[in-house]
Structure formats: structure tokens, C-alpha cells
Length: 426
Image (tube, rainbow, N blue to C red):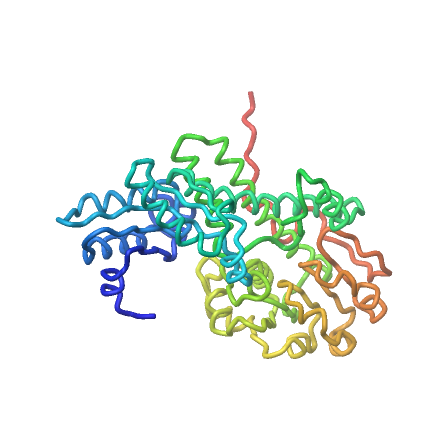
């Protein structure tokens, strides 16, 4: 390990670029296009300090034709005795299982030029991976196919989650159980069982960013119907978050103003401290907008990170209000002390082992439990016997509930954030 970047580049035969490529927050493509300033900075640094023959490989998730941009920078800054080849080698690592995914990958994808020099570079990178990956799992393509395959893979996975979440809404309205529906669907070999887990929505650094990147690419290439199709994956994810927040408000007698609500879990999934695009952030936003007092606990996410995430301008316009409404608890029992409701937002295994009798005893009654991850399915009978009023995703939990009258008309948080378009009279 070294912080001497220039020496590391000069000594290397193969250089990987693996930097953040966040969604742009300003300018053209704001909210959808990838910001490539770090990729460009790496490319300029490499060409500045390099000599001889080197293979430069993009590992970051990048938009299609990013490798071409890197190559143009190299070609515009040529030097004697400098030969830089550019490859695309997208990573398919998942947070929480990254080392295992690296050691036992489903596939390794390498894209490069179809020239003799490009094929030589591809072969060199293949030789590295073949030290531990079977040849049959190493796929070689042209550069553009490699880049698009990464975006498409994440878009397809996000689509499956949005699809099952759309079915979960239907299940709650009909009395079906989305877990049973997912099991039946998943046993079809043409579909498979992966990523059919209904929840409060997907998060993380890749899914939303990559789908939005795909939407932007389609719009730029004048494919509006394709762009609209993939935009709906994002829209359904947002709908699921809003819908869950609406259920919390409705069940708490149509108001959460001044009420203490315990949120268990803030990371976007278990076994990671990453909060990027976490559904917990948006559920917190909707509840804060209604004046709820949130007490948040997560075993890995630091207090400073939680406050920072909830203080972002698109989440809260007034950071002072965040300090008034949000308390970060040091343990789940403290978070639930005196709460009107308990909301499970992340599927941490430890939440299945909590002493729910003690939690119930110290909550206000009726005590509501909202399971946004279907984590506590096996505990529902016991939790009902304790006295909890249970609400979960994609299922009506049959129990003798405390009756309530939902608000007439539109929920307090509009499920459709944009007003309907008026039809033009003919």
C-alpha cells in the first residue's frame, strides 16, 4: 500500500481506475448522468507520469463510451515511448459479500478494442484472472458491450425488486401474501428466485445511479420509450417508500406530529455501514415532514453520518429541524423506550433476537410494529400474543387490530408527487 500515486503508476504494468462516479447534482444531465470528473482526473494523471507500455483498466461503473473518453485524453497527450491501452473490466461485487464475490465470481467481463493491440491487452488481463477464475467464466467483448453490460445487469436487478414491490401493493389490497407469490414465481426456472424480496425499496450506490444513467443514455440517443421504461423502475421504488410511510401515518390515527417513532436500521442493507440512497433516509424524510420525532438505531452507521444524510438539501431544507426531530440512539431498546411505533428499515439479523416483551412493555399502547423488510415473519404469532399491532410489506397480518378510520381522499403524503396532467378539451 502506498500514497505515492505517481511512483505507483510509473512502476505498474497494469493500472486500474476505480473511483467514485456519482450522479451529477448540477448542470446538464443533473440527477441522471454520471459525473466523470474523477475518471478524467485519473486519466490525465496517468498519461502525465507514464512511459512505456501500460494497460489502463476502468473498474468503476461508468456510462457507455467512457473508455473512449479516456482513450481520447491519452491520444491527445501522446509522448515518445508511450503506449497506453484501455480496457473495460466492470466489477460485480456486492457490499457485504465483496471478498467472496471476488474469489468466486459468476463471471469476469473484459472489454477492449478489436485491434491486435487491444486483443493483446485483453489477453494480458485474462492471464491475471485465470490464476483463480476458470476460463469458462471469463467473457471477452468489445469495450461498449462490456460497459453496457454492467449498467444493464444492475438495471435488471433493480427492475426485479421494483416488480415484486408493485405486486406487494396488490397483495396488501387483496389478501395475498407477496412471499408466497414470490416463492411460486421463483420456482419457475425461467425466472429464478433471486431479487424477488419485497421491501421498502432498493438503495445503495449502484442501482439507482446506474438505472438513471441508462435513462439518460437512452434520452441522449433519442430513445424516449426505452428511457421511460427504465425510469418507471425508479418511480416504483419511490412509490414503495412513500406508500410505506403513508401506512405508518394512517395506522397512527392519521397523525405522527410529536409522536416518537423508533427506526431500527439506517444502512441500505445489512452487513454494511453504507447509507447511500438508503430507503431509511426517505422514510425518515416523509415522517419528519409530518413532524414525527425519530429515534434511530443502526449497529454500524455513525451518528454523524445519519445527521449528515438527513440534513441534505433534498431531504430537509432546515438542518436545525433535523436536530429537533432526530435522536440517534446507542441501542435499540433506548430507541423504542416510550415510542408509539417501531419501524424495521434494515434487515439486520440482530433485530430478530431482540427482547420484544421488554420493548412492548416500554412502548405506548397501542404499540405498532412496522416490518419494512419482512424480517420478523416467523415471529408474527409471538409478537401478536405480546400485543403488537403488526403491519408488514405485501401481506395483511390477520389479528384483532385497534380500529382506525383512514383519511378520506388523498393520503397526507401524496403517493403521486406530481399533479395529474389535465386533459385538453376537444
